[in-house]
Image (cartoon, rainbow, N blue to C red; front, top):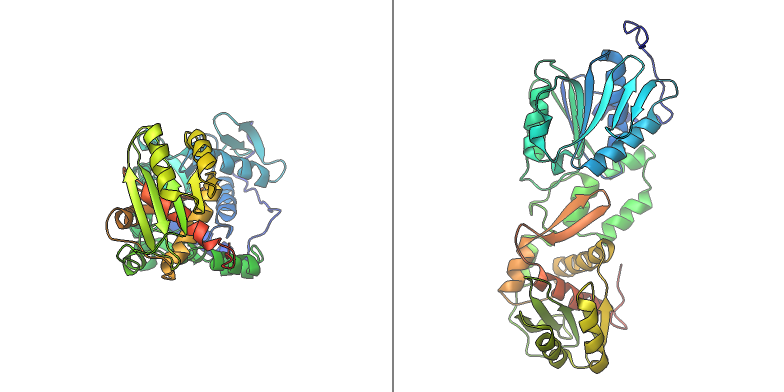
Length: 402
């Protein structure tokens, strides 16, 4: 049975918060919004807030929600909360339903925001919306409705992700002083001052990440390019006529399903000097790619269905080298291209390449930064260009900063 619910339970957490972290989350307002750097401790602080709120206001039958973009992220937060709870405060743990029941009877529930319609109906006595910029807008509407009857408090935390999302607009409302709203921003340098992050690690990230990615991920400053890692103005500044000089490197993205095979060549000055985009059978693709690249140094995407055709091309093209894609290797590829574009070190013609560059975006996930075409757009030309640029940057004598 729950203990006396009238007696407040005082709790001391093993890991204390740094001053700015505590001030950001534990504000005396009903609605609290925190735009924060990655690894700044926002989730850790929000977990402490929810536990404290549940111990203060909870009793048998009262629910406190933690809402995350996906089930996997909700599960990770459930596990972190379970570890953060001091010994003796948990009465029941249900790992299947992601629920922790405290000694006073309050239930901490960890939910996914991917199906907002399933969130309606309950009365909630306190809530955290984690990674809010990645949650669908409908999940905020549902969460808001569950707090109406109880007039309970809510903390919304997340990285910045452009300016075209509900979390960004809600943050601006809080920032200008909407009654009963609190706004705070935690940058990576705040986390450094608080002893959570290392200064050199942040400087390394600044040197190696595209400016727009670094500003959003580490400085909690929105990009005007709404998630485009290259920057629309930077893309436009690199538009040049296709070069007539010989190609010194190539990048090849082999087609899958409805995609296109794209072959891109770059000359000694970093300008696109060859571009071919087509859809065909494997035999024709092999012949066409081999004829284009000859023995020039070439990176070819060998992932999945591209691996067998790479083997055949490599037998007749001595410069062909496989590039196996993973989330990490694609991140390196795209961040190298982004820096080349931002520094004006590459040139390409108007058309497909420019259109795909403008439609490209980065998305923060639990495992890092994911780069891909937005919506139903293609990214074959971007991948081919990025492969050629990476091979160009890795030429002997040039060196590469990654």
